[in-house]
Amino acid sequence: MITACAVEDLPVGESVRIPGEPAIAVFNADGEFYAIDDTCSHQDASLSEGWLEGCFVECPLHAALFDLRTGMPTCLPAKKAVRTYPVLVEDGVIYVDTRAREAVA
Ligand code: FES
Image (tube, rainbow, N blue to C red; front, top):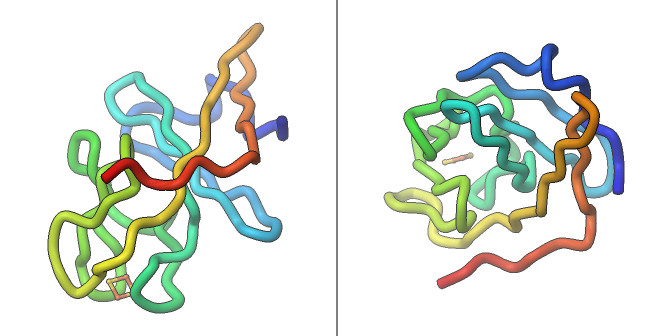
């Protein structure tokens, strides 16, 4: 488990990037926290800099849309899923389990 940030530091509609190999993006989508690979599966864009639309994030470079729950892209140009990671909230702190979960088809 790695620490992402305090719950109060990640308001609804915001994201945070956890550097590392791989870097992970954590999102607050309407009060639910999700963690996925930060690097888009299409090219080298940071998904934490994308735009949240409900449970989806739009890549800031070519606008592929990823489902935060599964990591699956829902439109081109991305064809490959990004990995998702379990998120745990405890005592006001957001943790990410870095044992990657492959995308659910
Ligand atoms: S880099 Fe994300 S869609 Fe191209």
